Image 1 (tube, rainbow, N blue to C red):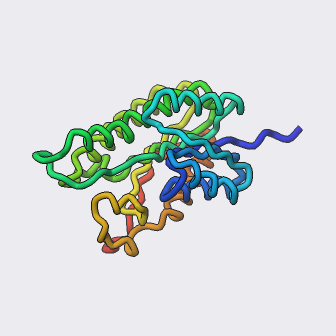
Image 2 (image 1 turned 90 degrees about the vertical axis):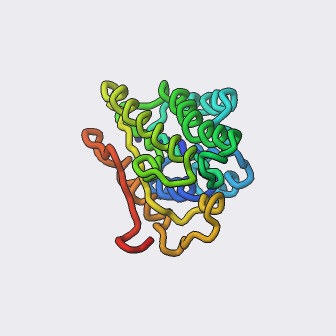
Amino acid sequence: MPSRPKLALVTGASRGLGLAIAEALSAQGFHLILTARSLPALQRLAARLPNATAHACDIRDPESVATLATLVRRRRRLHVLINNAGIAGPSAPIATLDFDTWRQVIDTNLHGTFLITQAMLPYLAKGSVIVNNLSIAARTAFPGMAAYNASKRGLLAFTETLREELRPRAVRVVALLPGAADTAIWEQFWPQAPRRRMIAPATIAQAVAFAVSLPPGANIDELVINPSSGAL
């Protein structure tokens, strides 16, 4: 009897790294649940990927996350969770940083990842993989990006704790720390960024697809990907 296809959930899948990772996992034969806040963009992606389901979800909202968890529960098992959804917010020094901006970034990047992860833990199969997209901001602070830096540094601690807690279940946890990638996130705080000199999202997606496909006895704890020396 043939084994059931593996299931992957990708948050923030409508564009950028999330879209590229969804495409890479689809090419490996995964069935996909694609989430983001914009359903039309997700539906366009799902229409061109085999065995993909689009489901709008606001990861900051516990009720929205609970509805998504119901969809996953119907599939019984989740093999890959890609926590990719995140925002940067506008650049501003701490002295003038608007609290609403701070709260939106923290709510999305940190609280949202917590909510999704906690909701999906009951459905993760033995040998499954969680990938949390942190950015190199988890290790390097950038002036004017206090909320983003804080959310990503907090996510690194969350990811490290999660990895230790899930070892007894043989669930692997990967911290993805990409450097400058050519995605739309730059429009939030640096519209003139030299994006042609950045890493292509497909390149990062290939690395993620490799990491989640390792044999169960191995894990890449931190996946750090930077532009070539001197590229940016």
